[in-house]
Amino acid sequence: MIPDPVVDAPLAAAKGQQTAVLAGGCFWGLEAVFEHVKGVSNVTSGYSGGFAKTANYDLVSEGNTGHAEAVRITYDPSRISFGQILKVFFSVAHNPTELNRQGPDTGTQYRSAIFYANDEQQRIARAYVEQLNKAQVFERPIVTQITALNSYFEAEAYHQNYAVRHPDQPYIVHHDLPKVENLRKLFPALYVSK
Image (cartoon, rainbow, N blue to C red; front, side, top):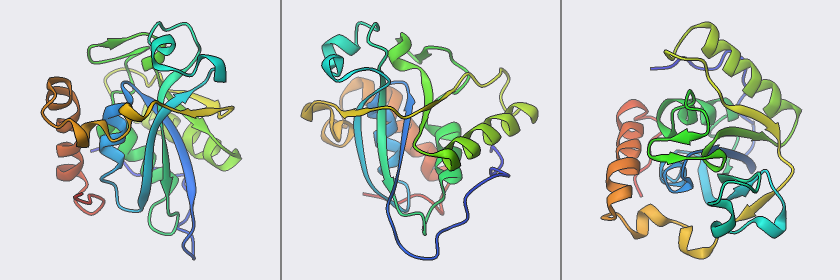
């Protein structure tokens, strides 16, 4: 189990809405995991890191657009912190030590990235990666890019809620449902069944 972030935002005093944009392999798996996290109200699959004209699946799949398959997570900062979202991201959502790949998927569109929306997110993300690397939590160094969020484009409708709509699809069964199960086992206090 990886440690809590030493640097984190305190839980907000009042309900609210913030967003986090993360990339780590195929967006179906990230979406499937974060849909089950307490305090998260919405997760969408999309593309981040490139331009509007190339934000479509066929072009992104070629690996030359600058986009990563990403998810936009809308959460209530009075129920879960940005640091806790990153803990789930690094623990069960993907392998942050694989460069430009996740499992069977290879290419820059499958890179590990945190697209920070403000200085606080950047500070928390950088400190956490440094903390995890220093503690040698993983066998190899974390290769997650920490980069400013310049754009996020929602993916095509058929990608949204993909794991929920296609639970028997072999890719989902082998690669994504085990991540959701790990979330349930490792983070019972954060897990919400749907």
